[in-house]
Every structure is written in C-alpha cells, then in structure tokens.
Amino acid sequence: MSDFRLRVFAAAARHLSFTKAAQELFISQPAVTRHIRELETHYGQRLLERRGNRVALTEAGHLLLAHAEAVAEAEHAVEARLHALRDPADTAGRLRLGASTTLAQYVLPGLLPGFRRRYPQVELTLRNANTEQIGEALLRHELDLGLVEGGPHSRDLHYELLLPDELVAVRAATPTGPPPAPLPLAEALAHPLVLRERGSGTLDVLEAALRELQVKPASLSVTFHFDNTEAIKGYLLADPAALGFVSRRALARELAAGLLEIVPIDGLHLSRQFESVWVQGQPLGRPAQRLLTYLITML
Image 1 (spheres, rainbow, N blue to C red):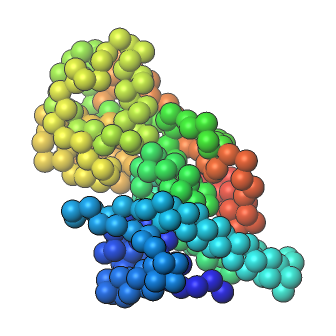
Image 2 (cartoon, rainbow, N blue to C red; image 1 turned 180 degrees about the vertical axis):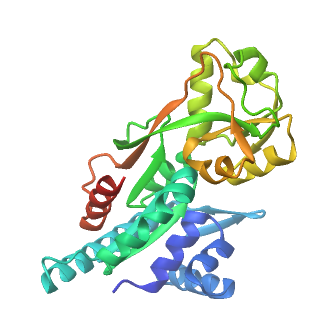
C-alpha cells in the first residue's frame, strides 16, 4: 500500500487547497498540514508554497505529484489484477466515472442501480460536472471514464458515440399551448434567454448552431446562465416571458404535468450526441468496459 502522506499531498496539489484536500480525504485541515510538512522534512525542500491566500506547487512539488499519481495508478492496477486472479470471471476494481449534467441527472440514475447489482465488486463513484470540466479531470487522471454532451473535442481525448439527444426551446406552459407554427428565429431570440454556463456541452451546441445561422452568441439577450438544468426549469416556471434551451430528456415530468411546453423555432435544429470519452491512447480498465457495454445494451 502507498504512503498515505502521498495521497494527502496529491489531493492538496490537485486542488491547490488544504481545505478541499481535507474534505476529499475526510481528515482535518491540520492533519493535511502535518502530513505535508512531514514529506517536506523527509525530502528536505518545500513542496507547496503560499502566495497570499493561494497555494502553488514548487518545482519539487510538481515532481512529487507526478510520482504520487504514478504510484496511485500502479496500486489500483495491482488491485485489479489481484481481483482478477481471485475470480477471472469477476469484474472488480475502481471506476471513477464523470458525467455531464443531463446524463447524471436524467439518464444514469435509472441505469446505475442495475449495473451495481450485476457488478457488485466494482467500486463506482460518480462526479457530476460540465463537459469541459469532465475533460479536464480526465487529463488530470482524476477520472477513468467520462460521459459527456456533444461539443468541441480535445485532441488528447478519445470519443465514442453513446446515444443521440436533442435540445429544444422551452417556456412556461401557456393557456393556448405551444405555438401552432414554428416561431421565427428573431422572435424567439428576442425573449429573455436562460442558458447553461460556459463550458457546458448544451451551450456549445446552441452557440454552434446559431453561428451557422449567422447569429453571434454575444448578441443574445441572456438573463441568466445556470450550471444545471433544474435551475433553468425552475426559472422558466417563475418567468413566463423567458425562454430556455435544454435536453428533451430533461422535460418528461414537466411536459406530462403541463408545466412547461416546447417551442419549435424555424430553422433551428439542435441535435447532438452523448459520448463516452477517455484519455487518448490509454486503455480502458475492465470496470469501464463493462459499464459501457451495459449502457449500450440498456439505452
């Protein structure tokens, strides 16, 4: 087993925060400080330095972080191989999954319990973040697999289609119901708009489609940017004049209850893909392979 002090240091180095490292590892902040000081004493040099209220890695800290990450990966690889020796037919090990908001809130909750029943030996954790944050976490080796909304691709990541999706314009339900004909684009965009935050795959898809129609995203009348779909839906219910763009998959309950309604817009088609993503050139572990196979079967 690796030195716990390395785990503490790696957490502090990733977050550049002793407080967040303590929260991640469920220890006190003074304990984080003590472990890092012990490492600094052992190696005879500073690993982290404070710059005002911020923490930064020294050159020695960057070197030790690379070592700590390699040790952690090696340890988990050995654990997976030992599990396989115990029962070659068994899938066991760690799976750090990251999923963008729509998938984490509206697709995965109904599927993951079945996966856990089928593969109880998999230590599965789920991080909910936007598409850009999932990609960054994969490149920092904080996640093993990502499930994201379509958007710009990184050359350092490998993407595969998971399932199709569609974004739709939506507003609070009106007494007359959805418009009988698609709204002209200019009329629709004149509404106060409620959109996802920068870095969201949903926003990327919308802005790309608007650019193709010669509409500059900077020209939009955006009332709020929210970091989750539930907040957008809640805002729309409170402001009948507002218009939002969300995944059709996120609207089942509100449409059935007559709370929200979809507004077709002339010439604006917002199809996209949900994708699985992992680091380019890095083989997927067996737990990640099993999860992808399971999801493809169930979706």
